[in-house]
Amino acid sequence: MRLVRSALLTLVLAGAALAAAAAPAMASPATSWSTATRASHRVPAGLPVLADVRTAHHPGFDRITFELSGPLPGYRIGYVPSLTEDPSGRPVDLAGSATIEVVLQPAQAHANPLNSGAPTVDTEPFSPGLPALKEVDQTGDFENVVSYGLGIDHRASFRVLELTGPSRLAIDVATTNTLIAFRTYSRHDLDRMFSVGFEAAGQPD
Image (cartoon, rainbow, N blue to C red):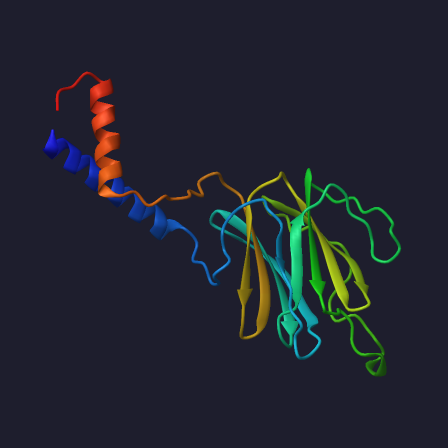
């Protein structure tokens, strides 16, 4: 029994190690996967200006990256039942059955008025053609608040990464159901689980 239990323990630990090694690398502390809204409140020294918006597919997730000139802004990122343009209030419909709203504050997506106030990124909606991320639309750039709508194939877990050099905010949307949350078990917990399993199967200790 002890030999079988040790073998099972070895298999469990090895499986956990392999799964952890296969998981995407996490580049900032707040990287848990869930469908909950994420928020960060900041008062940066300078006004962040959106410099680029790009998308890509990676094993297990789609990523959209917001690159900024200057420091990272505060943000609120989460699923919403509906989306409107800021400041007009006009409804926005996106591809997919779920919508994530991205609000960057303080931030702007246009040059200073002395430089004509031209947009610093393309403001037209676009379809990345990715498994989870179906459409991206800038819904606002008003009074130091930049907002985007992300059309998502279906409501899926996501994570937010704060990256530097240059300042970037990356949002990863899961495309598979293989993202596993691991719990740390003590040796006592494992012994008890295995003993209960063998007793249930009618095998002697």
